[in-house]
Length: 286
Ligand code: SAM
Image (cartoon, rainbow, N blue to C red; front, side, top):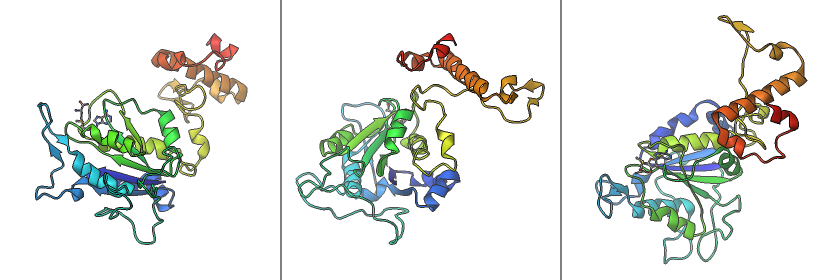
């Protein structure tokens, strides 16, 4: 999977070299290129923002700068032109000449892949607190993609015409919120989405079994049951007897009941979404 991240603080993503993500980069499973949006500015101050049209506090990210950057990364010709572009410039961590070529969206007339749902086509993602919530289902879908391009907003956000324009050019564009709160910038939100997506890429996890039975996963997408490790009694607190009984059938039933009970209590919305066939007779007794 090829990942481009555009930000005014590309250094933020240095931590991607750590842990499982770092190992996935080393093994060539994912390749990340971070880009400083300011590298696509032309003025002496490298400004990426301007005052809001209609008035109001704060600053809004300018569409022209984003467009120069994204046209380069997506290999799109600016509107009114046809054919290729000058190619990517000033990419940080762009890798060396031996790095695998990044798949480009190409169409002879518009420079756009005609089928945006094709998994080879780049998917453009903007974090936005006023967008639909990013879920495990989205992470699963996006983990199939070959190329993701993330744009991190700052200030009051980015000009609303940016995602509209790229969608009109045939690019698969997604805007997501990671929760009902407002962060200073998109970097944290992109890190959250990136981790949720890439851990589902086949080969990313050392033990693929560990992502099979997890919260929000599978047909019923329940919250997970409680987990315990040894010792069986710790500071006077014992693990449930059934878990050390050695009876796998009873352990499975106990965990299933706990998952159902926890989900009903903490996230009734997830239980309401289940259709009648998803729950067994035994489940219904919980
Ligand atoms: N004025 C915007 C609003 O009220 O909806 C908030 C802008 S926020 C200060 C700046 C940037 O941070 C956003 O453009 C977005 O990229 C990112 N951001 C902040 N909170 C977010 C969230 N909950 N989910 C995803 N992105 C978020």
